[in-house]
Image (cartoon, one colour):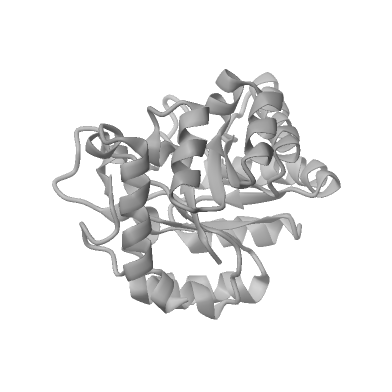
Length: 275
């Protein structure tokens, strides 16, 4: 296991500058976002990463699979298949899925999760054929209405089990799951099932920003118990990259290489000793 920097930890940086900041700190992996890849060019990004000797830990993001209308559902499935193709081109085996929130006027979380399950099942055979894993990311419940009707690791694993594909699993993102009273058992379950596909680390800061997504912080600045969660993840046998994914406007204002250096120091102090 080693540290990877999710591109949006240093979101304002161009693709070359983000890669340079990761390289300057002696790291070997970066997590990429599809819109940034598209802006720089898929082939150009793949070539840049290879040239600099980095690997791509994950590609964000697929998902948004709550559509009920047949045309919208077909479009969502096509978009996720495109994400899988992009992952192959970039050399990563993992696409992170943010499943989507409630549709306008809808209030039935159970029915919406059912559609998510059905739509992931429709994508899974293509992911299997391409050798790409679909990592369902549960988001904190405050995002259930607009971003993700999957709020707990157990809910993500329920979907993965029902789909029944070795290529469908889950993400443990500390920002979103640290509060869950069943987290210890859920992480152990993910390990037993072989469905822990990514571990992402950042802290939960207060007060919450006006945009709560931007309340992520450097490890150690907030309330999350990284040693405990990391030991739980390590006990599953997880041996892939550990991504630091931070959305924080103050951090985005820092020089990218300095922000990555701070992440690395915090990782070395709070995560690495517990692997």
